[in-house]
Image (tube, rainbow, N blue to C red; front, top):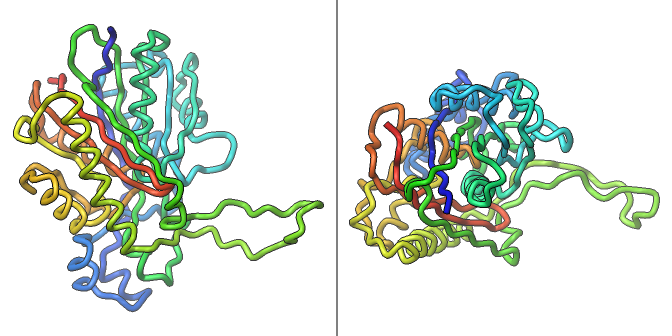
Length: 328
């Protein structure tokens, strides 16, 4: 059986830093209020770059890290809820800019779990033998779908992109197990509307359109803690590994309290959880890719390390990937 292993990582965030003090000039909040409730100190906000721009930059870095040319890529999958347009997809825009002429390309929508869903999809393409090398990107410009007068949401999110190259391998390393969950009955907990139904035959007629993120914070918190715990336990069970066999857990970077509570429920030391949300906030589908690339570039990962990537997001969706690091 062919396996999928990470051969390159990359990430990119806008240069513009927005601190909690900057936000306090816009809404009734403070650095102490935001940091104590979320762990976030600052985030990056685009000053003109769209999602495809961030995705492209992360992709270039991941290809370079994998020592590959764009022409080597068979497939590009981009996870995002903030595409430049309904069509073309961000993946197709990136394909053109990279010059990845032989690659198929499409976007996937699973909100903050998007990177997990995209990696699992890529792994199945590789396992089937259809493709050898897949570029997976998680990219968001969430700043364009925020209500900057709503302090319950605008303080949480930032812009950025993370990417990995998954390559076919004959040895049993790379992605060892994956687990995905969805619960559409909780779809109202975290939403961002698209273009409303308004045509010649619609009885509703034209409506006010406000495409911004809305969230039921307490319910999302409970869902997140439960599903992060469930997904971590699921991939451990599927591999017959124990928590002590895992060197690192890279969670979706939404709220430090969520991560701390999940660590407690999983009986895993918080020190095993990589956290960088204090500097980047919640970048949705990009958080896990950015964190993984940071760890790789900082040489914190060693060959043979067992790592769990775990996320949750609107939909509601959640999932985890357990992998063995196989990169120098």
